[in-house]
Image (cartoon, rainbow, N blue to C red; front, top):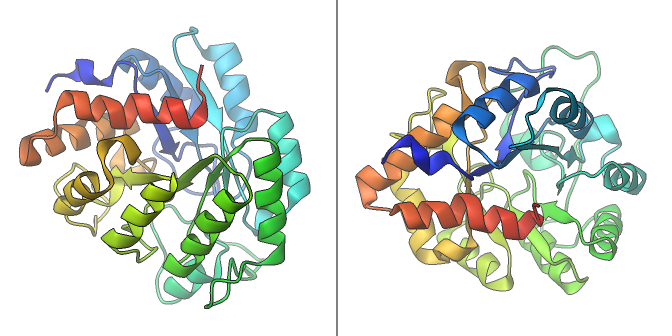
Length: 295
């Protein structure tokens, strides 16, 4: 597989600076790398501030017109949690996607009580107040339902965030019940604790399932990946190429270029499992374009 596979790709999950976390590249540097590779676009994610403000300026003033730079909104405590007003303003600014809580979710906080995580913010004088997405019976936080209703009304993209499998199940189910048409399940193989049967069910409901390169062994990541590469193959086989979106989740200082990370990961899928270039193109070009309605 040569590097021409990168032409026309979208990486819809990249952590680029400026950020309170230490990042390998900022949004301007990422844009230049993406343009050189022939990317069609990328989405910058920050856990704490709306990345879409910076990406709009970077694209306008530094881009050559070949690659789009998008940002998203993550509903953590820094923006008020399940804050419909924040979602409304993000929509007006053209956000690519709204994430349910990640680092502020109770599930995430409970899972990292004794250790940090790669890409965590620097020291803070304000303690995170855990946000409960749903209870153990799958009853969603009423404020979460308000956000879903808004997303449905305005045909926005919903990403499920760092909930557990019960919370993700409740979110995906309610989203489609209320008329959301575009759902991305955030790395169900990592932190969420979902089974392959869960992933298949969510795909059959109409969600896209994310595979994020940075957590996989033998895929080029340098941040102590924890998931065997065979899991990615099983997800592709079970959910189907048409329901998978491959992105990198790169940006960690140790990992260097997210573009290089994407190339090494898709090359590993080909070398280890025979995933074809056509299949890679569906999961990195066709599916993101359809989910996000990219131009």
